[in-house]
Amino acid sequence: MAIAFESLYSDCAGRCGKLTVGKKTIKTPALLPVINPHLQLVTPKEMQQMGVEALITNAYIFSQSNQFRARALEEGLHKVLDFDGVIMTDSGSFQLSVYGQVAITNTETLSFQRDIGSDIWVPLDIPTSPAADRETTERELAVTLQRLTEAKEVFGSDAPIAGPVQGGIFEDLREFSGLKVTELGFSFCAIGAVVPLMESYRYRDLVKVVMAAKRTISPSACVHLFGAGHPSMFALATAMGCDLFDSAAYALYAKDGRYLTAHGSYRIEELADLPCACSVCRSNTAEELRSAPDRERLLALHNLYVTLAEISRIRQAIVDGTLWELVDERCRGHPQLLSGYRALLGYAPVLAEHDRVSKRRFFYRGDESCRRTEVLRYQQQLARLRLGKSVLVVIDGKSTEGYDDTLFFRPPFGPYPAELRETFPIGPCELPEWDDAMVRQGCRGIRALADSHPGSRIVLSCSPVWAGFIRQELGDMETADDAV
Ligand SMILES: [Zn+2]
Image 1 (cartoon, rainbow, N blue to C red):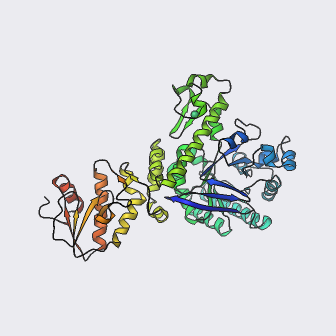
Image 2 (cartoon, helix red, strand yellow):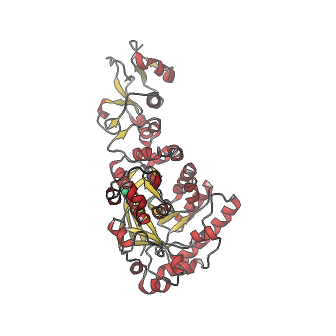
Image 3 (tube, rainbow, N blue to C red):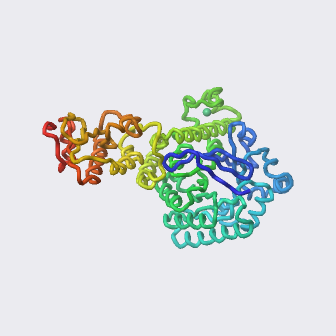
């Protein structure tokens, strides 16, 4: 019954992998649509036909429902929902966060989830709001950890139980929570209570708490980001190492007349046309969709299609090694997402440790690209170059004889020897015309080279076009006679 996760491809901290639960295996990253048994705009069967391999439903709703409780216990959840993929169940923690209390205990909800045949069970953790003060957050975290300990003791270490990671807005508490969940042996971790951050567009804070939790969660654990539903933030969350998302957004937005895209959402009234390739949008005009009697269902279908397509796009980007570019593109859809992206770039030294060596390409997309992991890694590795006593770095000037070694220059990376001309990142790096940001970053590469080779005399060769700028950046370094 145990839960196992295997990463097959990685890019930044993002993974493409396999999550195995009992005898079932699903591909990750994955979206688990939220199913409310009382209200199904799209049925689980239809979702399965759309490629959904796993979904999430609320065990608490089943346990409190006259209509579904007995049936779920007798026939099992998969039969009731008519879905034979992976079903994860939430415990009622969400209700706890909204209503302040639930009529069920930790062991009761876990027993119930087991008895209805759920594939992944969630204990009754306490989702502490980001608005909570430190004392409250610490107190609630202690209760959550006590319940996770109880879950392992009562149901055994192999039970398919998710380990929620709480800690509110406090990074050290998220880190501590991740550590405890890992020590308790959870191979499936769910980062919780981040919905209020996403609802108020606090992506910078989201990056901080997720990165704090990721510091201590085992790299071999599957990480679920609870309540992450808008496709525009999936790439960012994946780059941090989140593998699973669950979303009620496709249905909630549909009920509210909102049309999701990977860049943001529209009110259906605003749409003059339907910018999407799904069957709903190709067989309806915007006007037809607005006035359709089953508008909510059609919108929910569309919303689910675009959400699933975004997950597929992310998987492809990870295989290609172009996840940073997708994150860059998506995060320009909203200034607060851009703020989150910039915050994530601040973690480049940590992310670079996980980043892979070779990728399909590097597309320069402006200042932010200078701070990417590939640039950082490249500049760190310059220390390994074996160089003679005199080294000419040809920035954009002439190459002259008389030096032990000649290096060329590729911003934003910096100096490179001719033999690296074709390899990643120098070869498959596509740049527009040089700009100040990329050349400045490239100069940092030259500086790193000089610092790591104190026995080599580094001489720069640049044309008049960049000579002034280079002098500002590297004014203390020697330039070739004919440079300026
Ligand atoms: Zn569509």
